[in-house]
Amino acid sequence: MHGARKVKVLSGIRGVGKSTLLRHWCARLLKRGVREDCIIYVNTEEPAFRHVRTGEEILAYLNTQLPPGNQPCLLFVNEPSSFPDYENGFGELLRKRDIDIYVSISSRRLLNEGLAPYLRGSVVLRELLPPPEGIQETEDRSRARWNEILLRDVLSDPHLTSAPLAEDIAAYLSDHVGDPISLRAISAEVSPPGRMISPNTVNAYLTALCNAHIVERCMRWNEDSEETLKTGYRVFFKDPALRTARFGPAPSDEAARAAMNRRWLEARNQAQSVMLPEQAAFDSPFIRRG
Image (cartoon, rainbow, N blue to C red; front, side, top):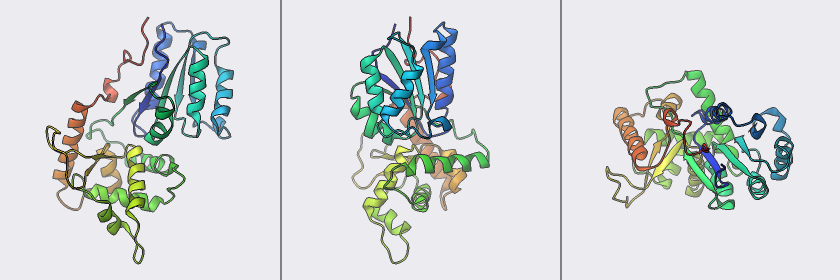
């Protein structure tokens, strides 16, 4: 029995396990008896897709991979970030075929600006959070992951081209975890001598950092989340281990900032419907029954 023809989206920072989870779901379905030719897995970051650039082109490719006719099938797509109008292709598939679509996305910009508005009411979102802070990755892996996130997700917006500025803003936020933040204060800190970077520019980079799941703005901050901040907002890191690996400790009160970030993550887990990797069992709501 098929689902309600929705696009099921796994979102989260790069390296959190989205691609692995998609592959595990494919393997699980095969073990449950779903025919292999009815499961299509596409990784759009493979070299074969280097020259595919539009929704029409990806749709043409997918039509060569999908089973003939309109027999039920499942499509798994990993990181469709290379295709500016991929949502059009997904919309065409939903309209014309009996298909379930599962997607992993590392940048919320693609979800917020494309998929969700275009397919309004037809997107189910689940977010994977990084593992607990005690689970460390190697320094080389942390550096490589940070650079990949910066290149592929933060600077994926053609209007944002300065990696040094993005890093300066992230470094400022790292030193001010949990503090009330203002765009003007950040601008004053990261602007070079003799030139003032506008708060609007700072906000654009901050939004990109949020979309890449590096940080999250918090407009509410107390234990029961009932009091709205009157001045400024606070920023927290979704992957504290990556933050520490990239920027090191804050210049003061590092233990207090780390504890504050940890409490925020715990409160967020309790308040929102999110899936930690170790909780993402194969009987998740994405997997159809019957």
